[in-house]
Amino acid sequence: MQKIDHIYDKIFKKVLTLSPKAVISAINGLFQTDYPLNSELSYNWTEFEDDKLRRILADTIVTINHTRAYHIEATMYEDQSIVVRMFDYGFAFAKRERLEKPGEPIRLKFPRPMILYLTPVKDLPDHETMILDFGEQGSFTYRIPIVCFPLMSMEEVSGKRLLILLPFRLLQLRALLEKDRSEKNIENLQSLIENDIFNTIREGYESGQIEANDARMLFVLTRMLYQHLYSEYEETKELTKMYDESILFDFEIAEREKDQKIEEQLKALKEKSETIRAQGEELDKKSETIRAQNEELQESRKMIEALQAELLRLKME
Figure 1 (spheres, rainbow, N blue to C red):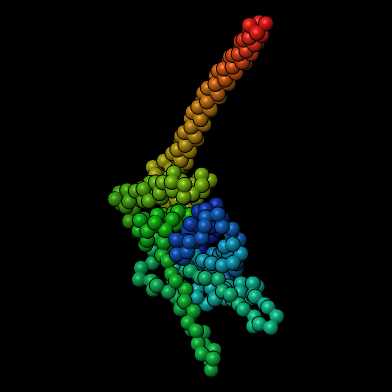
Figure 2 (figure 1 turned 30 degrees about the horizontal axis):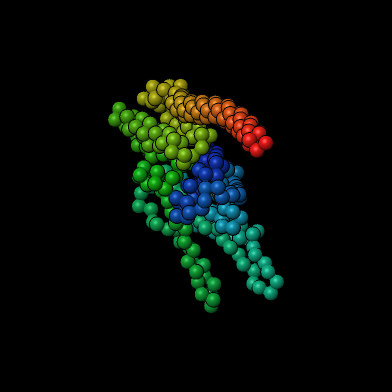
């Protein structure tokens, strides 16, 4: 079991409580499901401490539409016991949510599990496995798929809509910069932040994949993690200053521009509506004029008919 810093725990919990649209998009991407983005989410948090009373990163079990549960454990390091721990949590959840019907066996429905690595660990297997041996009843292989987020390509991250995990992209270069803070590596860090993280967040917001509050929070969490990882390095002082001053600035400008476009569209619609209303009033006036003219015409016709009738009477006399 490996200790994980509180900041990673805090950020991981926060990204999983962003808008349902953002979280369900990520669950669909990780588990290859297709839940509607307006589905209902509920959370089951599991926390524990090790023998030295150090807090360990919480497992997260998310239930969608009160029917299917998904169990994600974020980890930083390889840990063979993780499969046992996840089975324990899954078993505890299944017992709590067990299905009992009179005359039928009790059904324990485990959440669908996944191990999510936040640091780049090479040569990981596709699954962690554990054999459940029931003796003469046979055995069952418990499998947990593994995803290593920092090793995913940005095309895959965007394609699977894993935008809520973008702050953890910063961990991709942590080990390298601990050893070598060369100018090239600092440039790589800047490129990773600006292109892989910031631009992807902006694109996700502009395309409607995430909400404005999601984008703002992802910028904040990226800054928080950046300061934790890199702000103490002498070589990153300029980057730190720049991101401290402007990390939200571009997004806020983009948000204001989007709001301005909406206001302009509303103004144009209002002007169009006003024009249509004025045209309607003009048509009403014309219609009233035509109605009055029709009434005058009817009166004239009645007078002519009356005169014709009088002339006919006079002739007959």
